[in-house]
Image (cartoon, rainbow, N blue to C red; front, side, top):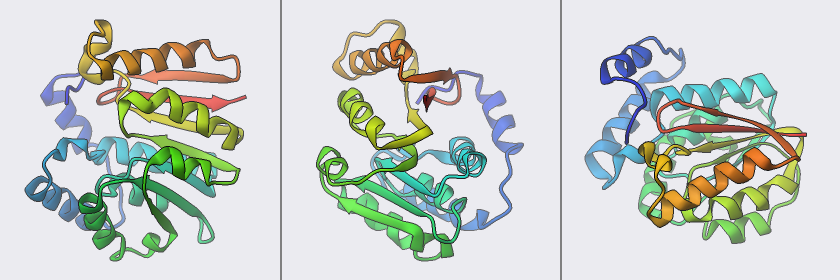
Length: 213
């Protein structure tokens, strides 16, 4: 995955990003992901994980929806910022990666706030009731527009949607393949959407923050 700064600056940013809670557990999860998963670069990692954690705190979120679990790094980072009675529903279709996720969730008290739903995300979303304070979308790119439209009605007033990989290794500048075309379509749609305000951040592979009006 492309980062939009030099490798040295990315390393500097990571080295100056700190979270003083179970850092060793997250490091072990990252190491096992690198050893056992076919696409370890899909993991959110330190910078995005800490940003998500900060956003949950800043928005006082109590109920979160995550579309795309992978190994549960981002799930755990967000769940740790929830209050004791908070809830994070995360959905995925991959049993191998989510099995690894649950292994590490079970080692942290915040893991009990995570509710994994295995199955197609659209079906899971259709089964949910409002309201969610925050939604994180990091799943199959060709369904990004569908996910966005599905979750917006479930979001509370002034709720936040965070969408990952919206710069897609810089390929959005020349969208040719189906995934890139889908991401570019989403970016244009959100920018024109009068129901929301948004900012596209050049963090890692691009993060879109969308606030419902």
